[in-house]
Image 1 (cartoon, rainbow, N blue to C red):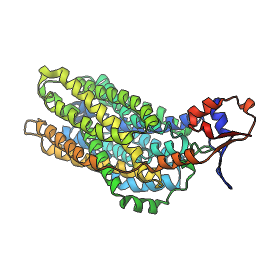
Image 2: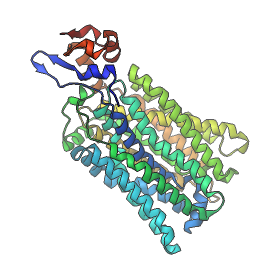
Image 3: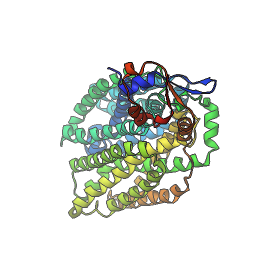
Image 4: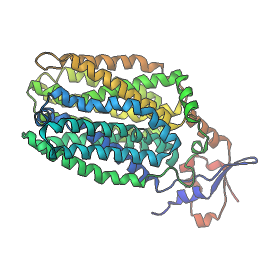
Length: 473
């Protein structure tokens, strides 16, 4: 793949400030392949996690257990995540991006393989092997989960980081969407088709997992000034996080929103099927949530990369999630309000999906120079902790006839709490401030033949915003 004219200009540029000479800045074309490898690692994680969510009843019949036991197979991901969260943060810091991604991708693949081979043993082996596969995949999950912000910082420029983070974060929901659409289509009304579903999911996960081989630690040249900064060591970084009250605000907001969204997808079939909806209807509901969330996230990402209005949307989107939870409560129990139910699913997606990458980026911004993997790992851990709490409480609120209407009220309450907490986030964006300071005070010196580079000053200005400080020598 060739290098664009602007990228070629960047490769020939150095930033100087008196006697101090910073290393060259450049955008590597390989950054897209690295992002793809991380995308599919997290896509596969979500696919394994959500496989049975839209076909809970059929899966329970196949494995010879209750529907709640099948929900526990999803809860295993959140519970197992917790003891492996800190080792995963350390591994990303000590071993690097490539090793962490490989552990995540192939651990998840191994878990999917174990789920499938259960069909070759006695029937009473199916459920234990299901949980064994889920546990192995869950243990590998944090190694891949923590990587998107690291990829953005190491490989992407300051005007594309949030967009890249958004796309990689959407991998989780793309995998969930795959499960929501594929699982009902394969299983239909025959529980024995669960085995076919396990085989198909393993093949997909193995194939897409190969993309993890494209992930490398860092490019030859840093993409931004902040990427050249020395980050805090692992333990010092964690200590800094615990002393940052603004990070706690993000910790609570991200954790509750992510946990509520996880619970929504885990129980989506249980929410609506008692009211006359089919498992296929539940799958469509989940897909609509994901499609609307994906579209809104992809629209917001480039806008925020340019405007840097992260804090405003971080706060506004929490209220969108609350509105979605309220609409869901007033529509799910009433089949005549099917259109309103689909609308509520779209609002839930817009709020939750769009907020997640913004929160991850703000977690890096308000804690810089803490390593990106540390802040992301802590936020992902928060999501799992609150996910377990919200899911267990939701199940405890299930009525004797299986209805989850009280659990819907519970979701409204936790989303409302977030709306009360989020106004307290007032932190400055340290990484952005560093890069703005470099742009505003340090001249960019281009060394080389500008005719050969073939780039105009206007093009350079469009990319860096420093046309007035370009010195041609």
